[in-house]
Image 1 (cartoon, rainbow over the protein chains, first blue to last red):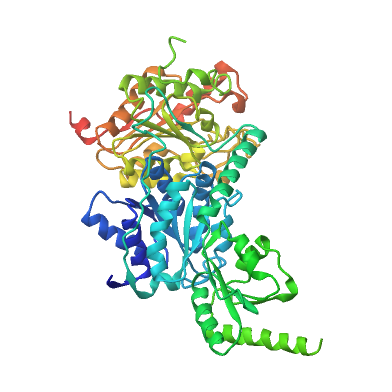
Image 2 (cartoon, chains in turn cyan, purple):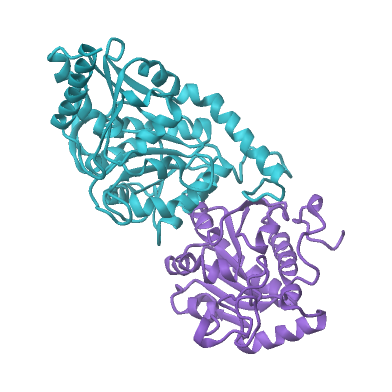
Length: 357
Length: 246
């Protein structure tokens, strides 16, 4: 199939359209603004596509919730400070298991930070709000991913009814790349929570997120947790590259994993036994597979944050911390050369240790 | 039971509001408005938190209880996604004039075709009587123990008058008091009808008794409503252009 040159933000909109999304509410913020621009163009062509530029990110999040309640595939897109504000709506989506889809394209933080790039919204996207993180988070690694996982995000959200996030970054938003716009094999149809035409006559739906008793809320959380755990095996995704015989495994997600993959290939060519493990879903985390990978291996965790991904990994997987090294570059890109050097340093040290045993 | 609104959920009775609460009266009137307009199966009721959340299961109408200040944007999103739905956002003075003020203003500015009903009881009632944007000068609250002073909290907000300055031609904006059944029913019905007719944004502020937090008996509460009316004049502040020509 022929490919088309698209920016990341454009690829996201193409994916959303292909998934059957018909509603975008958003507030402009770099690096996601063009998502609104492209959607506004689509809205101009087809007025059945709803476009709502709201007064702020809270309104965008809640408007997307309102649209989901009406049975519409609705989404929003934001980053950084906007992601903070939107957690208000995401917490409600978590409480009521509403299939709101959000494209989060990370920028530097804390605060306004930079408008460019980081991997510092892992905590916020996976665990933001005052809940337990019962959300689905896909971390994309390139522009093709943005198209593919935009479609997948809507399918997952409406199939499993948990708020679903596509976690990218400003590099992915703004980069141009050749994208193959595949036809999805499956499209999950939405259905309304309110004003459902198929409801029984005289039956009305009263939805709430506030409970009177501790026990009532605890029951709701327990039920959500049970459902989340039950569907997690169907949702979990990861990429495992040559970890089986590896002496050292790089752990990276998102665009950093793309660079890490190149580093891993080069290191293999040099005869070094290096593998790569890339969780695609940060939530639910591919815990079992990651656990199998780490045994008796040196681990290098690489990320554009001071350890948000590392903390997630350490909370999910039992690790021998003496074998774990970290390459953290908060709010900065990571180069192939930096990863290669870090890997070689560890392997050299390992050899030294073996020789002196 | 016979004189209760048909659209009230009988299983949820008795309602959860305090004795003498004006908000419960306003919700009863909203129930009659829904009945008389015959929109029980077309309406979505979106409620704020604060005392208004007590109404989450008050109606046999599809309902969503939202976050503080966010009933407006939730109903805006629902209405844009499903224009044939009749979206009613219900909130207090905190939800509309403080924490959700930007949503109310921008929904009015965009002329979103939703109906907002806002209870003005001159305090934050659910949390035990704090100063609201609507608290009268001199009125004692737990956060203004010596009474509201302009230098601390500014002047009481006049929401409908403020919205009138940015409302589109088809908007409907009114203020009434929940102890005046007939006028409140008339205004709420007109506000919802304005949405049904696709005229524009519609907004009704309802002055409402809060005897518990006001620490007033029934008659004293009604007297205080009279004081509020001096600050917040009742009436239709804006009717749609077509109607004003008639």
